[in-house]
Image (tube, rainbow, N blue to C red):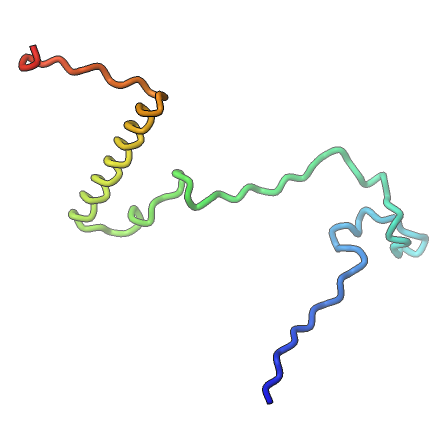
Length: 110
């Protein structure tokens, strides 16, 4: 008979480690009741974590830029990027965000 594996987890602590500095201490240096908070340690300042950059941001280098590409692959990537750029401009014109470019004047058009 195969028994399922039971994962044992640590019991949930009464107070998390990051909350310990804010609790009051008694004469022996031991933390007293978990309901008493040391108000002197609380400040109006907020600690902000360091923001993590997304991998899909335009700042991130392309994986293709890091690899050595053949001339055919480079041309294909250039063509695709150019296609995306022009499609974005077309979409913005359709939505009314950008004005359409003025018609080009050539001798053959006159």
